[in-house]
Length: 198
Image (cartoon, rainbow, N blue to C red; front, side, top):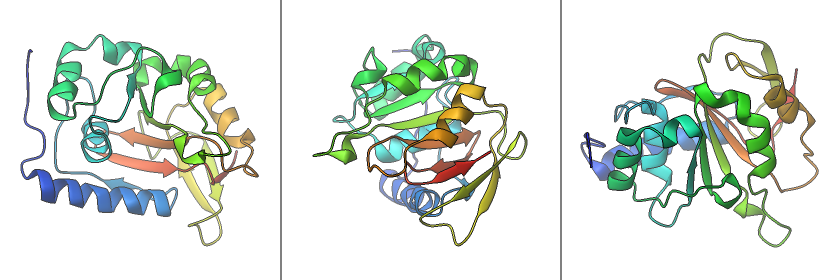
């Protein structure tokens, strides 16, 4: 293995702190939270690293987009610190990470990820998307559970396929995928139950 770096300094307390912030992000969609307990793994951003350190483990099937799969430092650190099995196809993933460099492939990824089934809707995947900003880009307006009225967000330079997916999702079904947008150490969550208007 090459370039193994430090993950959480205090694994229990750091993961608990990150979990509480992720819980805030998921229960209050569109709210920006910062994770500040660990750094990058190669080209994998500090925010994404901490999401995976907190939520993934040896039973979590993890898919990485092509740029990240080719990053030996990122892969070695994920194997060492997270131990999540890396899968070749997005269709077999519980968690998927889409690098900013691979955003053009988002359409195919979104079509491939597991959405869950009627018996087990919780088996829908979580997609972590690395973006260039959480303060710039077209304004999207969120509404639904966890949002008192409406909450505007900006998620950076997103491809049209991704914006279209967000705004056209079927919210009448419990099936779907949860999305986490990460920029450096900050993130915004958009669960499957959140309505997105362009």
